[in-house]
Image (tube, rainbow, N blue to C red):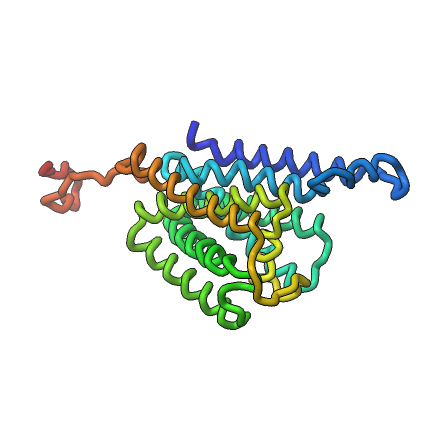
Length: 278
């Protein structure tokens, strides 16, 4: 069942893409009542934001509480986040302004990246560590409007150092990285998904840290109460996720145990049996 979990996730995301393209393909008149009703209400949610928010909330909860238990799914989601985020940053800084194009390309690239890391899980754990500390860095920067570090160069160096540190920890402390990293990354994804529905400005401020073409006002000031609530929710959810995973699956081995068989003799050139000591 677990071996086919990434396939189920792929089918789920493909269904969301098909739903999005179907809705967007339907002709809508600018002066019609349908568009006016869609734009009314407290959330003013676009189709793209609704789909992205649902993906982030669902996958965020899976990562936060079941990262090490569903290891293959975790690796798929890490590849999905990492490669999708890289493609988004590249296109956004390259001048692409279409929300639909940004979303579709990021999802497609993310799916391919997720399948790649399922096959290369050691690299996936290192990338998980990098993404977790990257998310933690964005959380630290988010406590002040315009960023705790106001210089774009300084922010870049700060995030780069955290990413490198996360990569190193992922290679040398694999088990702990999966638990702590998945809890942090999952909590951040959940909070980001909630913000796409609540419109607190949390995502816009994060986007201003990584998107050089963002038009958000970066003047230093105080963040809103809603943003503070999401920042607190992130760290609380991350801590709960770590506690749950360490308590429930702290000794769970996500890789096959190595054989304890020791061969004491080399095989004869003409065949024969190995003598083994257990």
